[in-house]
Image 1 (spheres, rainbow, N blue to C red):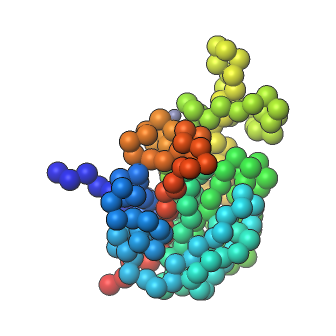
Image 2 (cartoon, rainbow, N blue to C red):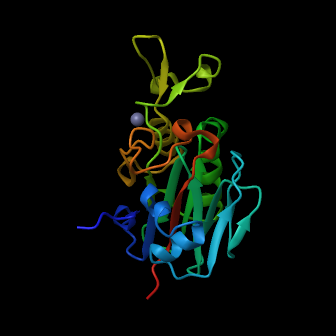
Length: 230
Ligand SMILES: [Zn+2]
């Protein structure tokens, strides 16, 4: 069987109108060069792809249009014509979708975004759209995990101690997915509605790009979420 070039994530959302996908390293080796190409490959025929410019900020926006979304690291929509996108390589791609209503979004959360409050900003946006938090499914996609996310002593006190482990060489490792999940639960997303990928982008070099492993030249994976078209 031919190996898939990307991950189909729709099964993580109970809203059957929602489709979500995540690109892999193999996608880039074939015909994928940008998010628009990946949208087509993974079955989105939409013209409106919303693309946050991503500056490790905590800004998230609601949109009814496609194209570049300035000054933002996350984008949400209630428009079935729009596909929300982000790009990542180690940072957390956090997907959101209402269980029945037309509302979805995706957020790029690195450690800075997480400690500075991008989850809270996302929750504020969701509430401002009159969406019930206990009806929202969340999926945290492939990202760097505690096995590989070593953090220096200079910034370690910015993380919740509950999610820090020290190894035998006194190095610190941080569980970013645990931090994100914890913040989502504190803000009102139900524990049973949050699913987390166990894939580590740093360990799984055949599947994913990793900024930590590959440095500035690292390519990115794309995360997409939108509504299935008939
Ligand atoms: Zn790892």
